[in-house]
Length: 404
Image: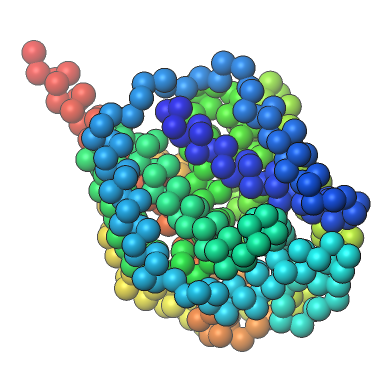
């Protein structure tokens, strides 16, 4: 792992600690100044992990120049694509939650609103928006800057992590994400889906580096915990991730690292769900007709048709690359890449959620499917770059090995 990559991974840990500490500060009535002090105390052990293995080689001038150019392009496009207060879900839910959390005396009144405000959503994003808004005195700027930083870090992290494997593929991925109006447009919504996608990407990057230092498991599981503390589907993401990576995460000599990482976010989520959050509408809405929905081919057809149109209209290149990878692995009789399979499995799980939704199915798909798919794009892009870089490298090694 590049040292630059490690520095980027400190960002989700920092905002995670801020979100958790801010929540407990509200519960115990602590003064605002205690939040940054306690955040530094909690994040410091991660920063001081002794001799964690990284590649100390500095970024080349070419790499640095490409990153700066991509950041410039993203900054300009985000300004053009953003609305001042974000979309409806931003000001009516996420930033509205943040405004309640900025009121130390009446913040818990938020959870009395159980109609359409989705107050069962975890608090990582609104806690950070509330914290930085109180710090800066301006919620509009704080919210925009927070989401802009997350959006910039996604392609930069992918590029920095993959450029040593194949600089060309890494650069293509960097500029594809940096100039894709559809991807950046959803990022500009200022919702939690962009943050969720970033956290999933970070966890995947950490697991790809466990072989060099097992303490990256602490980072990975902490970030998975923060996924759960960001959105309800983060619980599904974390559970499926553990299922796919159970060997390194749950083996005897690594279990203490997994617990050390996920412990605090998981406890915080349980406190929130048990003591404050109302019931989730999808979970509470399940009834005797759930089995009927699961057996209804028509509902699967509606979900698949909507997903197919969304993918083909906006991410045609990605789905072609995924299909090509699967075809190559079938022909060569090899198991598809674990990262690609994970993304496909997560997408399938999201589809099942739509099948059993108590909401009107077409309305639910129309209002949220593009955002859920957005969560998968960073990890998919990263996985494909790594897969095709490894494929090219393998072909070259094979070709040279076969020639005397």
